[in-house]
Image 1 (cartoon, rainbow, N blue to C red):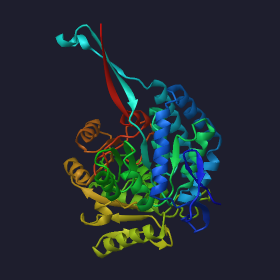
Image 2 (tube, helix red, strand yellow):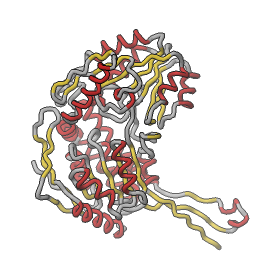
Image 3 (tube, rainbow, N blue to C red):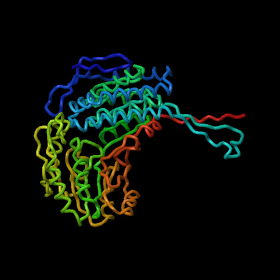
Length: 470
C-alpha cells in the first residue's frame, strides 16, 4: 500500500519510496515517499501562507480538535492495529496509546477554548497609573515537529494538538520507521475540519527531510522527541529558533525497606518491560535497600520470567520486538559486556528482533546498561545502604526525566520529592507513568521543555504586551 505525503493540502509522491516493515516479522506495512529539501521548502511555504491567511479562529480550532477526538474514539481499534503492525507494540499497549491520544486531543481542545492572556496591574507603579495594561498570547509562527518511532500516534498528537490550539500551522516529519500512524492522524484531523493546508507531512529520513526542516529559516519553533545526539544537533543547527527537546532517560526507582514488595514487583514488571522498554521513562535502574535486596531480586526474576514474548498482534503478548535488528543487537551487546564485567544477568536471549526480558544484578556503574539509556527490555537492580545513598545514586545520571520511590514513610517520600533532581518524582509508582495533561519533561540530557497541552501551548505562543492610555 502506497501512502502519499501531504504538502499544502495536496498529495505528494516521489521517485523513491521508503518501505515500512513490521519489526516483528519484516512483513510490509506500507510505502511512503522519500522526500527531501525541496519538498520541505514547499511545505514550509504552504504553512507560512496558511498562517498569513489568518482565517482559523480559536473556536474553530477547538471544534476541529473536539471532532478529531470523537472520530478517533470511534476508530481506536483501527489505529491500534496500525501501531502494532508498524511499531511492533503489543496490541493491548497499542490500544492504550490510541485511547490516550483521544485524551491528548481533548486536552488540546480545552486549551484552544481558553487561550487568552493576562491583565497587568499598571496602577501598581506610579509610572503606570491611569493606564490599562494586558498581555495577549499570539501564535509563535510555523512549527516544525519531528516525532519518534516509539509512540507513533500519541507523541505526534502531543505536537499537533497544542500547535493547532495555539494557532500555529505545522510541518510534521514523522519517524521514518513508523510514519503511518502519524499520516492517518493528520488525515483524521483534516476530516474533522482542519484546513487542508494547515499541516504538511514530509516523510523521509532524518538527513534528507528532518535536518533540512530544522535548518529552514521559515519555522519559528522546532519540537523534537528522540535521542540526545540528534537533539543537540538540532540545537546547534537552529540557534535562533525556539527548540523544544524531549530526549532520553535511564529512569531510577528507589525501593525502601518498608515498601510493599508485591506492589513493587508488579509495577516494575510492567514499567521495565512494556513495549520492550522502548520508552523514555521505562524503568531501568531499580535501587533497592540492602535489607530487602535479595528478596526483591528473586521476586523480580521470577516475575519477569513469566512475561509473554512474541507476536505484537497476539492478545496475550506482553513484550514484542525491538524496533529493528540493529536495536536488538545493540542491547544484546550491552548485556554481553555486563556479563563480561562480572554482572549476574538473567534473560537477554535474542531471536531476531525479539529479546527475552533481562535482569542485571548489581552491575558495575560504568556499564552502558546502567549509565546509558538502554531502550530495551532490561532492568538493573542495585543495592544501597540508606536513603542518602539511594538519592545520590539516582541523581548520578546525565538524565533527569522521571524518578520513582516506593515507601510507606511520608517523610522519606517528601524528601525524595525535594532532593531527586528530575522533572517528575512519582511516589509509590514506577517512573514509567505519564498522564497526558501533566507537565512532562526533564533536566540535563533529558530535555529542556514540558509537554502536556497546557504547557506546550505556552511554548508555542508569545506574549504581546498592550497598554492603553486614557
